[in-house]
Length: 175
Image 1 (tube, rainbow, N blue to C red):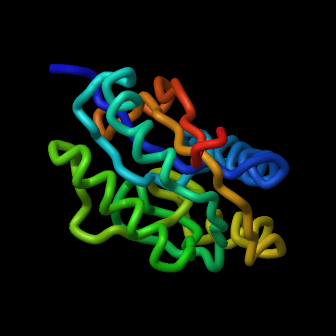
Image 2 (image 1 turned 180 degrees about the vertical axis):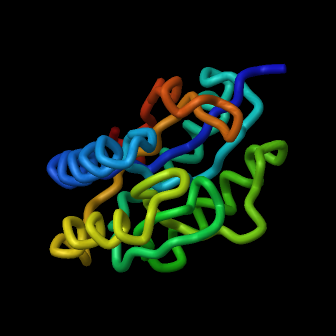
């Protein structure tokens, strides 16, 4: 069985640095795993990175850059959505997600696509979350451009420490 991969939308600098610093600080104080901030467009794709790239490149050439906005923080029961910032982008993000679902029908598709950037994975106390929200909240809403999709070695079964961005595919013909 091939290793599984995900498709991520990653904030550019300086927004990425700000979020990475906040996540790293939070994870150091709570013992939770640190990770690269990202929006998962589609996860658990059972194909090689090269096969994903070959299939996805013609599609990404038709995509236009978009803006994503982080709005508010929320908590949930799911490990990968235990503490996150909601992402808004209008219908275009849902359209990209659906296109990827059609392209990779064997991927693990969530019951409902909920665009977000996780701020922590796993259980954290309400006090920890409140402290983290206080450090991130001044930056919200945070809007950033996205002009590429990353192919990442990650899945629900892959240890977070082993996640790695392997390739990035720019949007648009000119890239």
